[in-house]
Amino acid sequence: MEKKTVADAAARYGVNVGDATCAAELVAGGQVDAIAMSGKQGSGKDSHALALLEARGRSGPLHGSFAAALKEEVNALLTLWAAVDGRTEPFVDQAACRFNIPKDAGRWYAGRFGRAPLSRLARWDAHRREELPAEEQPLLREILQYHGTDCRRRQDPNYWIQRAVRPAIAAMLDGRSVLFTDVRFPNEADAALALGMTLFRLDVSPAVQRDRLLARDGAPPAPASLTHPSETSLDDYPHFHLRVDNDGSFGEVQQQLQAFLTARPEPALAG
Image (cartoon, rainbow, N blue to C red; front, side, top):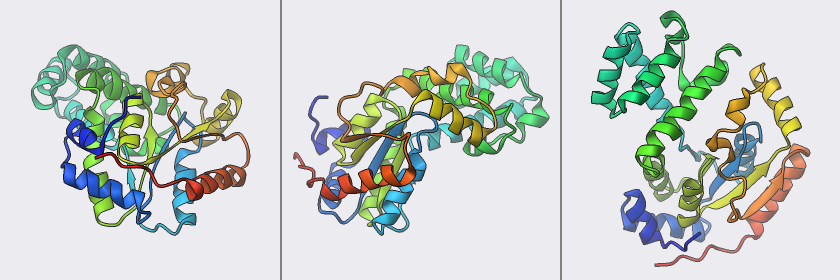
């Protein structure tokens, strides 16, 4: 990874350089924690990040997300599909006009939305995918993966980073710690590092992953979802501060994370 200064990161992600510098200094000085977690589905990212900050006495952290804006946009597309009564061409035209969705992508969404009755789609909320019936979850995951990667990241690789970094910096300036538990691509990992965050990777074996997802979702994961770029792009990323095998007990893994974060030297800030 090329070395980036905080100023470089601010320019790249569209944030105020003074705010980005102050936020990074708060992290470096230990006033707040800033943690980013990478890992496949079922690797325990959310559970471990939240437990780690709780153990360090960091109350009220911002749970930032590169995917929050993604889910909001998918919900908006679902709302539009219902508004046009599930008609493909009106949906394609309005998605292009209102959301800058290419028409070929609009037809892809229409094809997927058309697999379920409008009455069923009306219950969908991308923020609460895990609460859907198990048989409906794979389709919504497919739509989320397509919108996040094949549509928006193709338009701008930093699209989701720009949407996520601004509220994270604002929270740090307010004295709140920040955690991201959905780092899925090299440029997202690079952004976390450039802003002084501690970047962890939780690895999980396929067998343990399958068992966890089956217990969580009530169904095995769709094979295509496991090989999507959002699942595999960081498999060989070389710049994690720490990689941990998370097949073991929760307590053992948590102990490794806490020990590293406590011992990690203050990150050097380049001006």
